[in-house]
Image (cartoon, rainbow, N blue to C red; front, top):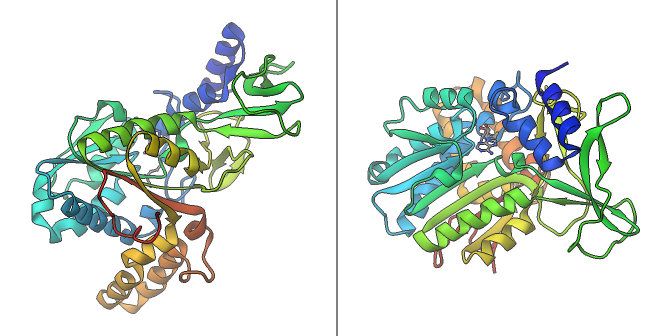
Length: 364
Ligand code: SAH
């Protein structure tokens, strides 16, 4: 049996069932056996593939977005350029390369990467070795130094833990991870209803609460409102109020049972953009979007960028460029958009008085 599962079983035997939030945190971030601590999850051979791994155009456009935002902030020098959960470091490497058109921007960067996994920190260091910008690493966003900041988070909020509440006739009960008769991990419900949740609806309904994501957004938005800057969140999720559960485990590009082999599969939940927007506004920041990723990339000029790349490369590369654009941005504004182009959303949270590119008509 896997060592993390043993540890979790011991914890439950000792202290009783644990919340899904605790379980997800252990499965993803346990310093030795957690998924991100022990695996190299990305790429065609890994468990999943992310936008910066599909094409360099994704990181390049985000790099140019950061330059435009920095100019709109009146070019603070120095400023923090931050990435939350940089994975293999591809997005930042592509962003910094594209930003070479703005040497004053590059010269003002204090680069900070927030990453819990030492394996991935090493991989990020390798990806950035030719970037001409010195980087430092933090394990949590709380450790970031103060100052104006441009913060990028691609597929980061989806790995923050969620809690589930299940409707019963007497109210909402938190879903817990416990042990069944054969000592295997299983889901159960807290015996007491959770005070303070809305009136019960239909028994069996589930609320998925992204408390950890909302808490992080509150802190980042408050810092941006007070010290200046912008946060760009790109992730898959829903942007209308919605009830249901989206927790999923993915192992080698296939869905798996979230309670089997903790630490071996990626555990994620769709991001509740409504919750993030509420938290950011309440913290005093300005919110732009969310807009579908495909539309946002089109507004930033992914189709023009692809046409240029086609001119620089030989014909053998054209099919790869075209298929990357299709995966990231879909076929155009409304027609034939692929899953990623529609399911993924871009959201910006900024200091007051700033209109970041790609969101021009998206917010009231
Ligand atoms: N942004 C990258 C990787 C996404 S995967 C890309 O798009 O390819 C999620 C990343 O967040 C990984 O680097 C993972 O190690 C990191 N991570 C997950 N939870 C974290 C946490 N609580 N604190 C810091 N980093 C975390």
